[in-house]
Figure 1 (cartoon, rainbow, N blue to C red):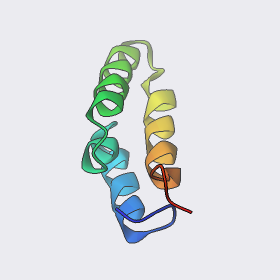
Figure 2: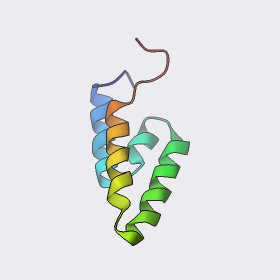
Figure 3: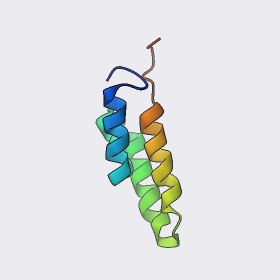
Amino acid sequence: MPGQGSTGNVIAALASFFIAGLGQLIQGRPLKAGIMFVLAAVLWFFWLGWIIHLWSILDAALWKPTGSP
């Protein structure tokens, strides 16, 4: 995917809106996707999963691949 603000990042952020970590998975970051998914799932038991969910959306939207200008 190109870079921050690209269509790919918008799609990834939308995917993370529905399922925490899905956007990171689309971007090719499976470890971070798994961490966000598990953290959100665990924290939803305490009504705090929204914190991880929002972090997942913002992370997907603002992500810049390494090595890009």
